[in-house]
Length: 203
Image (cartoon, rainbow, N blue to C red):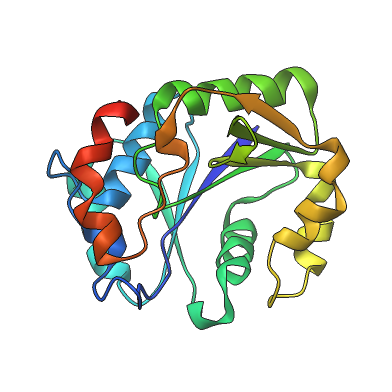
């Protein structure tokens, strides 16, 4: 069983407004677009981790997609991205959970085909970490196999999941894709302004 986590609890300080709710070039809020992509890729168990904008994000997902989604609220997102991942894990991971697919609301353009490719590669290999890659660049989503759940829980909040990723660098399975959307991270107004120019290559 694979659980998908969408990390959408950030305070969006560099953007100046809540990134989760920004409309993509088709008019769909980022968070709804990401959830729809995961759902269309065959992921049935999706958890969205929210923060201060909890009610607005729930509304955006409910009205922007038909996917059945659970929500978990991070009471203090300022603790860092790993804190949101752990909130999601606590809400979603059970004894039958074999893997955790993690993606960011900041990366809204990833294709359904990329998600499927990463999931298929993980199921075939059960590598500890599986992620999409274009050359030496890697993106989202990232799958953490169950064997790493304990390490994620024990990782220092300040350095986040990168501590675990670095510890298993030699075991990472990078899945070749041609999807620039898995790399497009929207953090600033400039990034957002450039989005329409990049969306064509991400479909």
